[in-house]
Amino acid sequence: MSGGDAFITGIGQSEIGVRLERHPLLLTVDAVREALAESGLTPADIDGVSTYPGRMTVPSGFSPVGSEDLVDALRLKVRWLNGGFEISSQLGAVVAAAGAVATGQARHVICFRTVYEAAALARPEEYPPARPGRVDGWTQWLIPFNAFSAANWTAQYAMRHMKHYGLTREQLAQIALTDRKHAALNPRALVREPLTMDQYMEARMISSPFCLYDCDRYTDASTVLIVSAGDAIGDVKCTPIRIAAMAYAVDRHSWDQAEWMAAYPTGRQLWKNTDYTPKDVDTVQLYDGFSFQTITWLEGLGFCDVGEGGRFIEGGHRIALDGELPLNTFGGQIGAGRLHGFGFAHEAVTQLRGLGGARQIPGDPRVAVAASGGGPLATALLLAKD
Image (cartoon, rainbow, N blue to C red; front, side, top):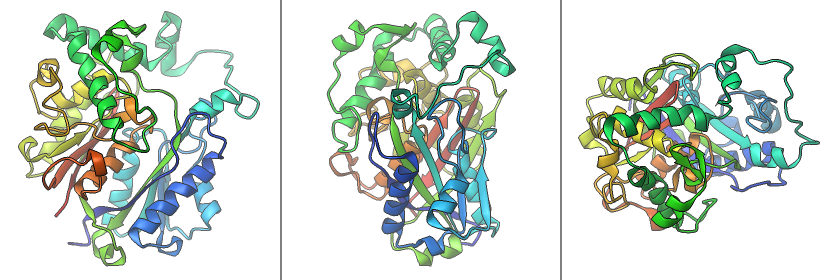
């Protein structure tokens, strides 16, 4: 293990729920404490903090806790700090932390993502909704055309796959059905009830071709990853998981008129940064804010050809726990809750350590991909148990 390597060591997660009463900063502290306990580190060992997107008041509850909030709450003595919206998606905070420890700017960095959107909607007196007087920025190309939601923005790409490549709703359903099946085995998952194909097909439409079950839902939770330098691994008591490669892409930081979602260039770039290939991967934890995004990641990462994603997952057998490519083994965001990207890396580490419990994939998984985003911006991590 060289000093230039970066590893994910401790991982932690708070309670996951809807309309939680616990303050979002306290949820963050809960997740940090769990990560520190697993790693054997103490707050005194932490010298860096990284988050996405930093503290924001708009949209309500989207990001109520920033890096400086956590530093103050835990009285951390840091020499490296990061938090911002203009990066390559949620796991871009992990990419930044990996760069910091690899270049000696820090030894142990807490990376976190805290969401509180469900609670914020339920308590508008505490989290007043934004009422902008005008539409500007990149939203000016969307809002006037009634494209208010990322469901609308993503649906156009899914519809192209249906028209050009023959993707069917029954194929698309396999993401939601698989997520819910795996979530039933995850004691922390938000939704643990099974989902049938009939229920999926009869659900109300949100933005064609997406129905209710193609979409994640607002959740209150915090997820933490500790990124450690290679020469600091001796400080920890848990099994370190190496960040074997990273990739990210930003076509335009806008959903307007991008020809391909950013999962495609990001997926291609990941394999240029490593000697591993898709055939080496034991499990994939791929962003599913909307079910179709997972299909774009499967295609972009080269597990199947472009346009073949629907046929690749047809029937759900290939992506089941005992399949050749177990997918979103914790339930993804559709089943486990909208942890907004960080849940995928958390689960990848859990699986590589063999700590998945009832949802643990068979054998001895050693290589995983975790990905976040995939619309106009995306990040992929290749993780390995050496």
